[in-house]
Image (cartoon, rainbow, N blue to C red; front, side, top):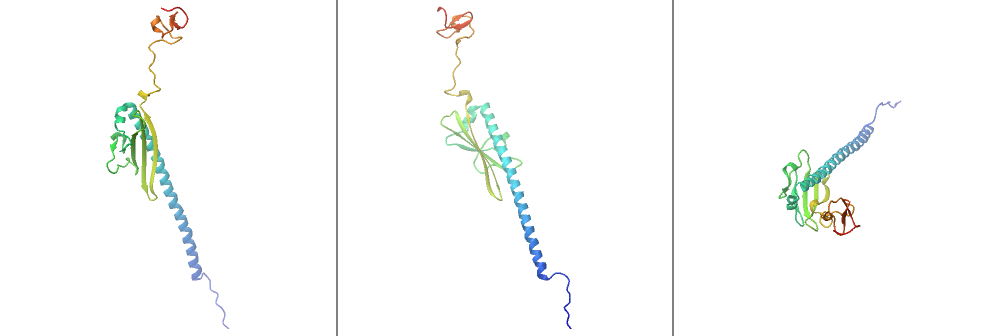
Length: 191
């Protein structure tokens, strides 16, 4: 008598279940994409920070070569921290927050400290930035020496010729050498 009517289509439960599965898959894909974009930004900032740090070291090396006394005047023990937003503006004493490096969201600080002697300066360069993952810091350290005054390794060149050097008279040769045939030699008679 009563026949079951054949109903075509999905039940409400099946539709809700399919929507839930689709939502979970889309959430995972969106989460993965967001993480990938964040990692790309972090890697880009890390690369730029490393390059800016190396550029700072090169700039400091140039300052050392131009005028050691000026660079040494900026250092102390245990160290003084400076801001270096733009090398064209030079080092600025860090009193509050440093300015960002132009065109980036990075900040650069340089600490100059004497080591065991006033002929060696330790330069500590920190480039840092803040993002959704927190604070990130790239740190580079190098030492600069007063290469014009190397210290115990530096020797005054001799004012007299050594064995085998060219000479014209005996006074051109270091004692006990003599000038024989325009060559400083240990053979021969004295003056």
